[in-house]
Length: 477
Image 1 (cartoon, rainbow, N blue to C red):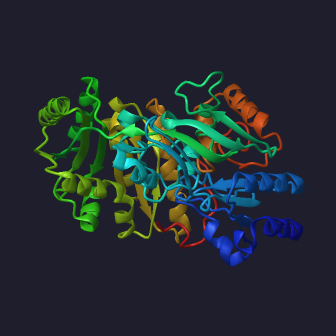
Image 2 (image 1 turned 90 degrees about the horizontal axis):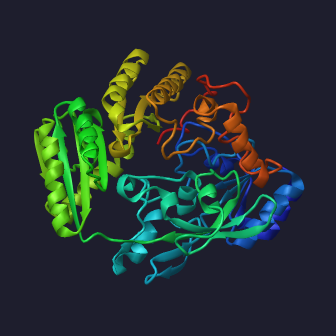
Image 3 (image 1 turned 180 degrees about the horizontal axis):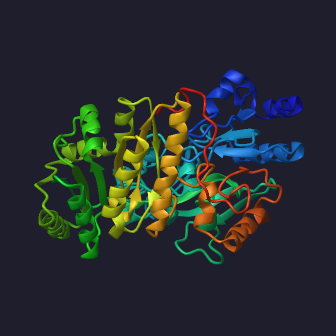
């Protein structure tokens, strides 16, 4: 790294606002994926003005620039693939304003997702997007990846709750797009930037909608002795026009791992469980909960439990949202995938995932947002074994390719990042990819902002690509 650039960054941010030693940089070379890429320095801005100056320095020295939230991402989107400056927003973590009457909030990108809900729940409001990592992930990162979560079946993903953004463009210009109004005039630039994975601008302020807490919530746990029965239940519920607030599924292997850790009351001898939630007005919720339970029983659910109180509900959700941590207790490394399929293809896809795991010699657990067909197969492997690492990457690629064959997509909420860029030609024609590249180049003409993400590095790809083996121990989550 250019020492003049380091000195300029230190003058701007102070010595405690810049990291450049090898030991410090090791902490920022990974996220929650199996990807690894080390920056040349890490900086911690405190304001939009700081970010403007960092971008100007990046341009002057022609050094790549990558934004990063909490590092919980699962596609390598916030890794410095080509070195350069990693801009970490953890010190821009203020809730700048809350408008209870109009149900709006303005936050900096480093605000932790759950902290916003905690700040407004006294007024009967919450911030609806709820990734499983919501206790740690930041709203800025959620915006970059258009994050989802268990309750997005009814409430939508991040883009449905973001109204406006303050941005620093790669040119160094600070701009405001969108507004606190529900329908902004002109092009939907806010929708364009949400989910752009940090390739178009750095976000420094976010205006979001706040959603009223429902009057009544009922949480149901349906227990099945067959995975097919559980998946067919999901298909039937949605085909009847019933839209639960959440519809999550765990297979038997995963729920046993979770139960050993959380002790949420999951049955250890079942093949799968569905965690379903309905909310709204009391009378409607009672009727909808009974309808959901009836469909579960029609598909041979051996038991349908209704959480008796908020404490029992919280325990069930604790089990779901701590599933990845539970699996980390029994295996040194695992690879979390993120594919999307039509709901009607759930039974066939889960059978195929099991076949792929057996063929390649891996245990694969399944936990996912069943209601919207967003799968998260969890492949257990040993990162210290180079041959096993190659096999796990191949296995993950086979699963995603099958999702595409089923009419699905390569990611539902984790993003493309540097993990799946080579698979983009399986979804899009070269004309479509060139159109998207043209949008990126219009905002990011020098290509310095988060280079090497989303788009394949060469034309005509689409094959499963095996990355180099990361350093042992860097992928244990």
